[in-house]
Image 1 (cartoon, rainbow, N blue to C red):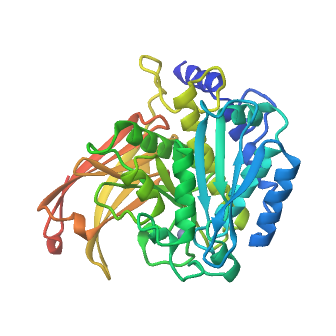
Image 2 (cartoon, rainbow, N blue to C red; image 1 turned 30 degrees about the horizontal axis):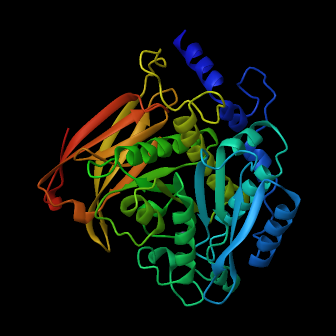
Image 3 (tube, rainbow, N blue to C red; image 1 turned 135 degrees about the vertical axis):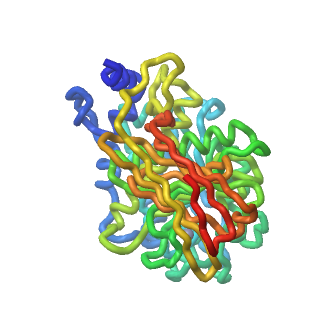
Length: 427
Ligand SMILES: [Zn+2]
């Protein structure tokens, strides 16, 4: 049966699958759920800058796997700590390097909580898959990029500058120090962890999202393959843990003053902005779990891409090899609808997608004039078309339901005819 073969292939190639999903559904293998293990290390309330610095110092002195250094001082003279976790018994040359930045905005705690939990878990791993992971990976983490904002309880740094609008300008000591560290380490990917405000009128701010670089002819194919495949991988794992997720894609021409766009669009590094939504019933633990899953999704993809499934399977099987059995067809249908929307920015259009029918899926993508703009792992998706993209008289809008490997299960398309005043949708 194709579905059984498909499942078996995942088991053979995906040690991290076992780690992530735990024993359930893996034939009774007693494997830990790595997210649950890391979540047990999350504190009940956010750590202060002093507490976070102290924790890193303690792990550094207790573990040979973690090293800590100051990258320099913030505007107000506080150390910007970088912690690196890896197995030092293996040469750094061939390792996959990941660089994680948290809390450029001082009030966004969940990224720091996630980063410290991940570091602590990996640094205290005496054996097992985590130790195997550290043989192949070097993970560098700035858990508080904005110490002044963290201490002062504000978004900006000690000079009242928004650090995540300072990339490329490098007017602040914090962005300069982190840039130098990234250049020195030449990571395979950069991850920047943030939080979304509880209340926002922006539609794209209503749920957790990841923003990364979309596939574009003027960018290197390796870069785009990494960002697109990793973002799909993240969406897949978020679904497994019931996290709603949207992914938005950036393209040449977008402002480069944000960290992930600077490294992705200007420097050609796969880079990811991860935003967990605050407010409602979303606890610090739940929000930090979102960031851990996003990081693991990227690690999984990089591991599989660089190392392959053998000798160590640190990745999930995110692609269906050519010629191998496809998953069973699922009776899924996609509805695609356009709604006019008026906001302070002017007239806009919401692309509404809805997956109907039984069966599971990986994600739904939205394409505008052939360019993939977003994906969601939710049955109902709403993507807002920016007004400045609507310059043509007619726009081709398409959406696909895909399985977790990107195989298209169902498609729908429509034409958006302008002017918007008499929005016409031709099926
Ligand atoms: Zn932020």
